[in-house]
Image 1 (tube, one colour):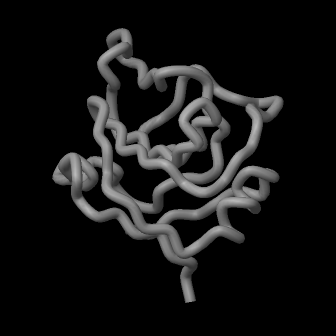
Image 2: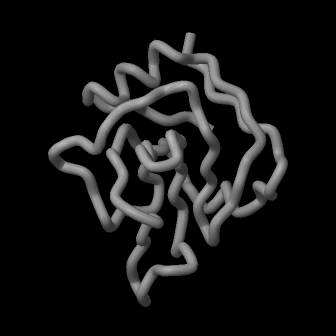
Length: 112
């Protein structure tokens, strides 16, 4: 699935680390996996996100793909385990990620 990174410092550091490959972890309708990037929370860090948001979770040094509620979400919201830096957005329907299971290989590459 295509996605766009924003111009934040965290997104730029992730872009420099590409390509990335890891086994997916799922937590409700979130996919996350550790990446070799270390960044603090940025000023507009979010406690609530939208479907299709891409995030970086500093506590776990993890890349996150949000496509629906997590186990701690209240009705109508998508809540990460703790605040995340928003680093981009999925292009297209994020519901396609519902087919990803724990342990599935996830690969992130720069567009050519």
